[in-house]
Image 1 (tube, rainbow, N blue to C red):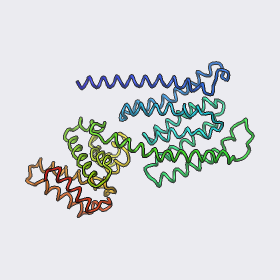
Image 2: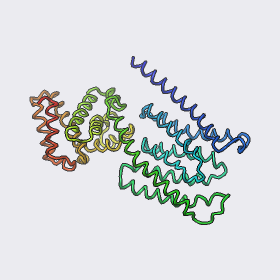
Image 3: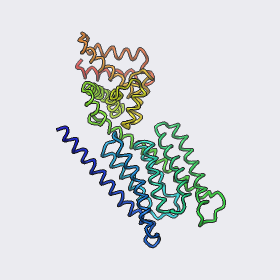
Image 4: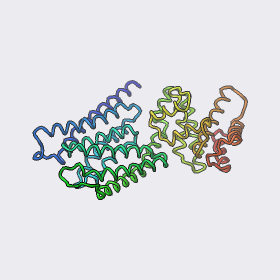
Length: 389
């Protein structure tokens, strides 16, 4: 039965990728019609344009196809956005190309997945767009590449406010300067000095893109947290396949953390997801935290969850949030209870919970978490109720 389900899943995946491959050809052909009408095109030039566009997007599709850690439905939605967004941006009849924020597309992809896919998307979007418009003016494409790279690097730092601010200022300054030079390369104009008008337009568009990224970041964060806050997520299914005892331990920690978070008004979904995935490194028998983070990165786990993975043991740094403190207490409690049961030692769950809480308080493990004594009392009540104490 399990083998049959796998075959159906593999067949469905093949059908979807064939569909996306065919859709790419169709969209690229109609996109080429936006600027290259039959009256303005050389004989057989359209074939070259369409093939170039299709191959550019196929690079992105191949990257998605090879990414085994990415869920199929997520890959399909993301590729539709990558393929269709530039098409709709190019439909608008704007005379100034600076007003077409094509680099916003790869910046959003960086948030949704990672920097490498974002840069690859940027290459596909810019090549396929500029080969359609400026087949004889490659200089425009080079400047667009530079702006795209600066934008993607800025988006990749969104989880660190200080780094994001610095990289965004560099992105804005670079866009301002490059857009001021933009018209130097147009042989149909007579601009012979820095164009502040176009530079200002470019700066305003870049600033708008950064604001979009800032808000989209939170949307993507909540979507991704929701994706991992499930016992049926990909990493949890692989944990279950590797070790049923590890799976039940993770589920127990996750449920305990979720109940505790609800009792003090902490982030329930984040606590639950981090509780489920706190031992993600054991999928590959990781020995230290760097290996844990490498495994977490392979699954695209958000930084907020990874921070808790680092902090919940207390070995590398103290919990810096209430959610991390909750997962630490939940993991310590579940682990201690499991150990006492396996060793058949005569110690009640109430005594175990008392020891866990007193130890963490006395060694100041929770001193940076911002959690109060009153909140600890409420969490402890939840734990005691969970174990019928």
